[in-house]
Length: 353
Image 1 (cartoon, rainbow, N blue to C red):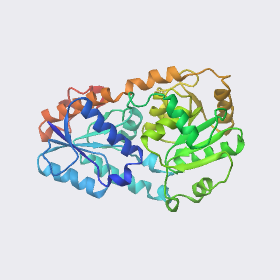
Image 2 (cartoon, rainbow, N blue to C red):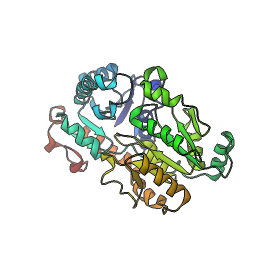
Image 3 (cartoon, rainbow, N blue to C red):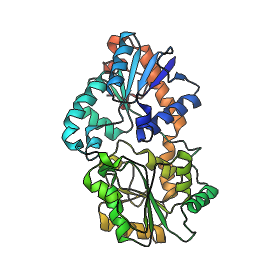
């Protein structure tokens, strides 16, 4: 069995969560000794598609015509497309129809969480859906004291500075507007947002936020995986104010690094995290401000070990085993039967619709 990991226009998505997920798939297959290629000209048995460009959809159709099996990875939903780029809310219903067309071209759909699986089931998709985490490389994302020093030296912070970071595209959905408002309200802390989006594509509100000039607010842009590890290691809090996610890989990274985390209380994390037990959550600016102060001053107890217990279940090695189970099951099924739930046996039937 050989897998083609296919992603069109990789340069366009490599700095996003989709790009990070593709890297994780490669690592998961390597760790589990599964043969794969990223070259569509080479031989393969299953194509695993991660993008939703027209050429991605065409790849699925070509693979089917050749008698190959198709796994379509559902990283996106209409819900997490909204409040992103300029005009995204107008386009969202049309984007949903396109997503459905792409995802239905697969034999099996994979999506990162039970939450996103339920959203997709609400679309009326005709193919079985498995929820498998994008995973986290626990071996890589470990706190590094020297890396933390490098980070502080690079950005000219001293040991006494209290540093709050977030990671993501410059889009409203990611919570960037609230991030900037908190920086205004809390000048005693340093607020750093890592990530980048062309400001010509964002809303006026987001552009204004990114162009805000404050002595404690920084937008360094996109940084490498290694630099991000240093940033996690040298920070006092990871602030994840996203309004909607299909999983949130950067959250998994921060939890793996065992640094304090504060997130927005949104539906995807219900049943996964509980405020005050394994993570801290908030709903509005006053709550965020109160909990930031409590976490950094340590008047609120540390929950980093409890958060780590949650994220370690999503280790890349385990994700690889789950992917392999889906691939093996797919190879056993005749092409005509793939849409029938009763034919999909091995991969935890509760995970498949």
